[in-house]
Length: 312
Image (cartoon, rainbow, N blue to C red; front, side, top):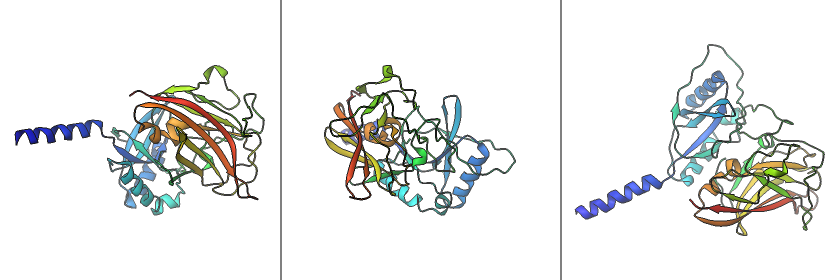
């Protein structure tokens, strides 16, 4: 009997030691009054919240976290879909809720006595994760992002209201000197462990091999501007060892003059996919597509690959 109890105890300890917690992040704010107002609105609508502080690039953000811990990504994804139907979420057009992995340290907030318009802040989040976004998606599942949140560049940067994630689009119409044409007619993709700023690329920062937990950013160059598209006709995909892993679809129409984008692979769109990889060496491939409005065929805009090593 003692042996059985010991085995059960060891299994319990092992599960808790290696298990991963998941939380649903509902927004990130610099302004504490906006934070308080939004949190109160959520609580009044039946969504209990807690807060988490994070400091990025000298700025302190407060994240609003759904007050529920999940032990599996699947259960978190089920609740995430339910939360998207909450009247407050719909009222403020919040489309970029994401699943955050790892433990959190709840924080308190201090508010001033004044009324302000609710505006969520752009959290340029690089310390992770993940979300921070993010929602894990496998095979037939799809993640959706709005173009208002797809680049960390000065051009096109704006506060979210409160479509709450950290990336901002870019709208450069000039072709980069780093652009190269692939054999299949698509543009090239360059990878770095640092943010690749628009029109400020440094060839010294580009890499072809990354090891966990290095950050991975990708700048994707198109041979031509995207042109006219419809909702759902612009997306990118992650492939590992020639096997499709995840697709991220924009749920709004991107600007027709986009000729490049930056994708935060490890920090945003594919963080959970990479975090859950077992030890090994992988060929990581990223493809960017649009659907031709006339022929309805998929057109590859950019493609690139790296070696990703998991030693942990």
